[in-house]
Length: 123
Image 1: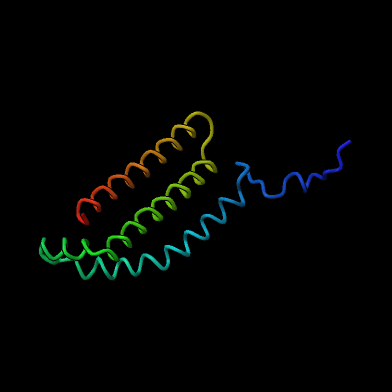
Image 2 (image 1 turned 135 degrees about the horizontal axis):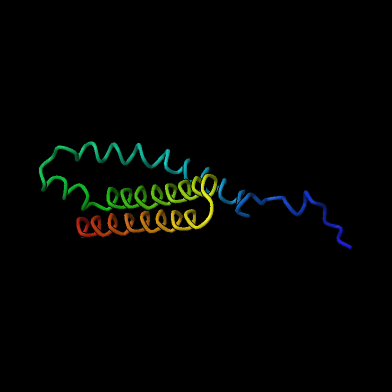
């Protein structure tokens, strides 16, 4: 005989079994991006319109390069998780699995490409 109630079994579980964890990840990454993105836009805005050498000099410094990498990584992780949650909510069957795999591959591919480009500029 089980003494666990239905509520206790369901606590912390969403449709995918990780509802609370997904919610907190999105909340924390949104707050982090709310701080990072305006700072990145300020640095990027100052470099925008400059000559090729000026832009390279800006992103060769450690603070703009690290800030750009953080925005790239956390922004794409936030995108991946949000798109995956949307797909889980509105799609079903094998098309759901294919769409989730495509979104994950797209976001990590974009992240790798951006970090590679940033590393080529910064180093």
